[in-house]
Length: 337
Image (cartoon, rainbow, N blue to C red; front, side, top):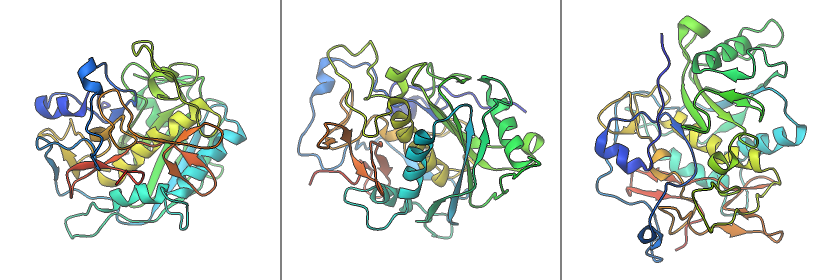
């Protein structure tokens, strides 16, 4: 067995036109652009529209059963950091959150169906968790050793995570002192499924890393800005933690794609199933109306000057938009009419 290589393009559209690059991972910062890319039509209600995008259903399963997210906290995590992430996951199905909401963002995911016409579930809950605070597989992980960490979590003698191939989603989160293969240079997170030869089961999983020490300008944009974008100042993060606030959009990206393409044979664009362009890849870097190129789009600011675009149960977050296959645009709950 070998892991699937993940190489990111500068734009999802490039991938669609070439169909030669594998994109099971993602990085949120915008591509290098020229001045003309900064000009947008302010009247757009939805962003990223293109007649060239051919997102298709390939008859594989999607997550129609209620989703239970099982975080695996690898490394050293503060209680406050865990709380930010837990509350985001619990906000996905929350009722009564102030508009625009995380649950409103998830409604785009719910538009996707399986071959029976059943929609992806609207119920996403936080399940049992596992701590790996002693770095059981070291502080430098490969794609295959990530699967070994998941195996340790589900096969542990002490409080193992439940095995749920139909509704379980296993979310490996690495702390800011853990390096993962291709981190920062190519990816900030990725998703796939576990190999029975390693884990014993086929389980949808995702990895997302805290980039605070390694590359916040790459993986926590726009809370930090890479050097190749001169003249742009970082915005203030809504929860006071640049690394974790940056992780939230990557977590959202991966959960949305796991729901719509858990075994990499359901919803994606491009001719090659080994190189899928998925519903979040198509909208990377877009957080609001007018977004595209190196512009994030219209976002919101709270009374402390922090930037966000959705409300959770008790917190605010900044998460990217998703591709809506019904209207063939990127959409989000904070769109301007």
